[in-house]
Length: 126
Image (cartoon, rainbow, N blue to C red; front, side):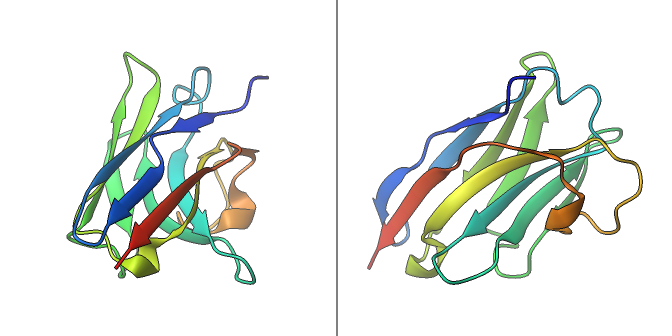
């Protein structure tokens, strides 16, 4: 099984935007949730945004609500994360993840996701 592959990370100044993509062929059709997580050194990986693939319902961490948008393109088997009004605190490695298990708690329970990409670095400078 090929793992999800993220792209679109990079460096941007505060207030700028980036769009992350996740090529998730084989996952979008059989996942209950797809999500974006992020991690900085010394901290646990945290949920940023999630999408219930069956109906497109979206979920966000409080810290990114109103700034980030998660979306999926089923025809392209691709997951996106549009990030606007970026802040230095958004600096992290961002991971795409797929959860094929029906039961696993809330969308941001990282332990419930069973497929992970390798991550893409996002750096926001002040």
